[in-house]
Amino acid sequence: MTADDVEFGEVKVMGSILNPTMENSFETLVNFKDKDIFVDKTDFIEKMSAKINADKRFFAVTRPRRFGKTVTAHMLLAYYSKGYIGTKIFDGLHIADKDNYAEHLNKYDVIYIDMNTIDGLFDGYSGQKQKVEGVNDLVDYFEYSVIKDLKSSNEFSKCLEKHQIGNMGLLETLLAITQDLNTRFIFIMDEWDLVYREYRDDEVLQKKFIKLLKNLFKSDGGKACFALAYLTGILPIKKYNSQSALNGFDEYNMLSPGDYAPYFGFTEDEVANIVKSPNCKVSHHDLKSWYEGYKIKGVDIYNPNSVCKAVTRNECISYWSGTSSNEEFVRLINMDFDGIKEDIINLIEGDEVTFSCANFQNDMVTIKDKNDVFSLLVCLGYLGCAETKNQYRKVAYVPNAEIKAVLMDIVREQNWYERMETIRRSENLLKAIKELDGTTVATIIQDIHNSPAVALLDYNDEESLTYCVMTGLLWSTLDDYSYHREDQAGKGRVDLVYEPITRRQPLILIEFKYDDSAEEAIKQIKTKEYFKRYIKQYRNIILVGINYSTETKDHQYEGSPNRDPFFIFRNFK
Image (cartoon, rainbow, N blue to C red; front, side, top):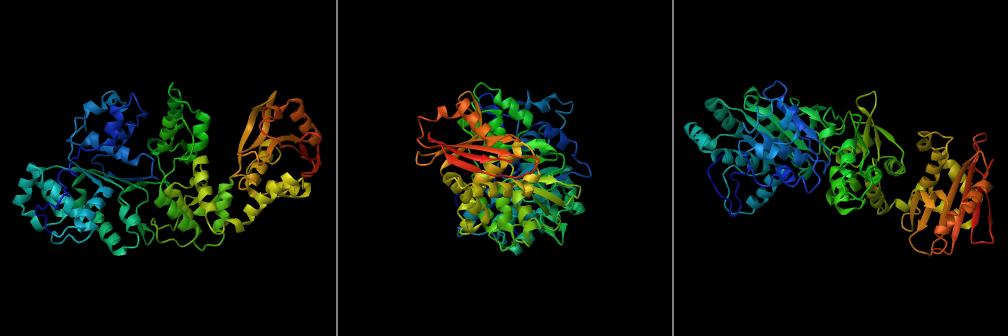
């Protein structure tokens, strides 16, 4: 391919790849760190610097969207690149306290590739009448763009003119510079997997792209050009025949996270510091419930993007946005794999599912079974992933309330939703509560209590019984109710409250007892006047007293209307 200097209409490439300085998100965060949320993770630089020019100096760290991958890539760019004055950015941060702080600070020519930008520029190039010979697809354009940017450097252009680089490829170009000038580059690529996500059906393009990367990072000549290489994206490096196509890279992904968990996402201690700010109006408990739950290599990780939005807007809701990834989730759960829909619903209800990631090809097309579906959903961030003693056997779960809300909304839009047994069970339970159908209430609660999901908890405690009721009512109360646990009411706290959104539905107050009586539960509700907080708002209030016998493990029920507008549900030995 030629690398002659050509402009594509309004589309220009020069200066956007070699030591770029425009729109650095990390620099922006530092500049506004006294006004906005800033979590200092510059310790990560020390870990990368320790690998410079080492035998193992190529890294791929992949995480779901909104987990700080680009900010971290921009941080490395600002630290290593000759295009920055790093002392203005990093002085006062953690990395500045390290003994080797200045050793690598702004000492390298950095080739920084944002594949989203390359893809956007290629779209512009594709629409132009004037084309460059040999530049026919995204991979050609990527290679051409890097060479063109290297030629924009006076120092490099003289070297390349001497070698008559005009028709040479990227590897030959880099080798000429490295050998003549005795220098090595740092290579950073963000969204490395774009070709496998956005061009997922174009196998020819994918193989061409991975061949280019293999030439750069696997051949001895290519390896000699780089002091450090760092790739980031969503998907792990593509496999062919169960082997990584770039096995010279050390990989750290959601299925095999390694030791870099604290640097992508917020940790427990970091969130604790965030909520100490007088400007933070949301509680640590709410942030944990909504956005934590990604347990990566024993570290509890919060979605950083959602935490920042919740603190800024003073509201814990779902900030998980991404139509394309949601569409991908829909495609995956509607694949014709036996039991996948039931598994997803069970996961939403709090169950766990084991799966194998051994044969996952790390793409979005080669999906052969449920194992591949769960592997991909973990990489996309829709599921959390816990390790087992078998490195390839994992445990999938829904990590937090934010993801749960997203998944529930998606599932409810599917045409099979109302046909699922779990959904019908939930609707039947709410109906039975409203109609005083004690047999149905007791049967459903007992069925849930004996399910594998509850077996994960202590069977004989109030927490598991509360979980049974919440699970049973999960789907049927979505539109009409919000629920609260241990809600302050009257002279104490009622165990569980289902508060209707409109007055057309009854308020439901639930008190639990173990080895006692339902009468005592109802008596407690009345004595402590839990209902008084609500009585002026709702004409119809249902009091529910549930008692469970640890001796017989039975759930039984009696119900009768009261002269007051209360109904009593009674579960007893």
